[in-house]
Image (cartoon, rainbow, N blue to C red; front, top):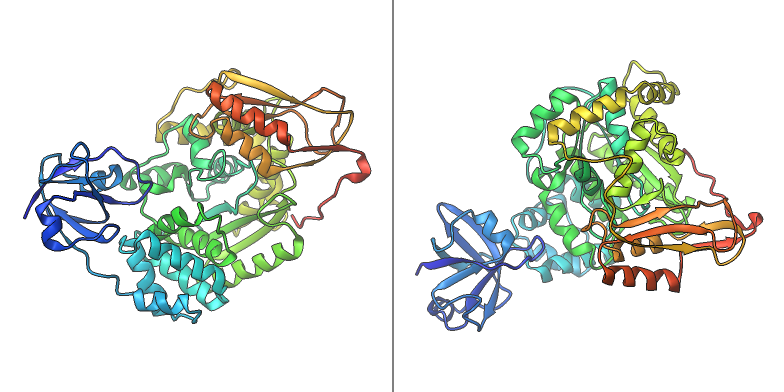
Length: 511
């Protein structure tokens, strides 16, 4: 019983949703249930979707099947095209899922079946949530984390660059403004190492690397064009969502982030599976540590490093882990345009370039350059600095930007959101602490990253002496309502502590 395809203009955020009217003959004949999985077919293609039942013909008629925006695009058929709908086969991995919920240890085969079903969108949101929570509460052991990482890396596309080494850099996140990748990639690529950087968009942060790069260039590079671009320019900074690398990871993230679940095991599997699928042979991993970072103590950072090293070793990935200072934002800008400004100031050796972003990027790039067997340990930093100071990194970045699709950007007058206010120091003293999470929240309330010109521009850092009523940071908001939300949040807690120099807590990081 074919139905006419109808596009339902609802963004369901990476979940395929189908809509049937309650009075639809097919709905009553097949005994469909709301939130069950159905299979939709048209033109030889099929997708799985979660069924929603509606009573309003304005949404979908009696003889129609509605699809959400993502599902409609994925099926690739025109509105009105006949489609067939049937009950989806239950996931074969459900018994393994139930064992994990019961607290049992799963086998390599179990994880492969679960990940395959997740990647094929056979799990409902309820089943996905059950898996994520079971892994969180069950505390996957090292072998299980390897099994999960390996399974995620094997499902979906895998790149093979036919050369060695292929280098990449990743930060576990949680530090606003930490746009070192956009500096590391052109430095390393200018040296000649292959560095295919596929980056994420922000989910809960004010900007991801892809959001910031999108200010300067297109980041949605078609998969078939990505290989030629990288081989020609030795690097890229593209959004990973179009490449279908470790697709199960994207599905799991959509569940983990709203639940604020970021367990060590799932973090390791997410990061390493993506790098292996992208064809990387060598990875530099940045673990920032600070009171308002994801990792809050050195012992915790060392435990996480050992876990990454174990799993990476089992997967055949050469890993160099650096533990860095995450006590405050990196750079001055928090938000896509402000962060792009900081990156371009460093690349152009601008006098107002943020030195902390420059120095951290050089150290990371130096460590990555030492993956080159022709570079001795300890020489990487000097080589990275020479590449940056000479303008070679800028030339390489400009070439990558042109290849991906350049967008207009004025470094000296970036287009910022129009509604702004400044947060002032309540008294004279020294900045003793900055709350990363608070500033990130203020930037998001101001409209970042959806409004690329919104965000927070830092005017003071830890250790700076400030006078009463001196500006600590400036907030740029896209709309008056967002201006009000960000202002209220900053008034409740500015995110800055003002005290005396001896109150500053120094971190002994292992860079």
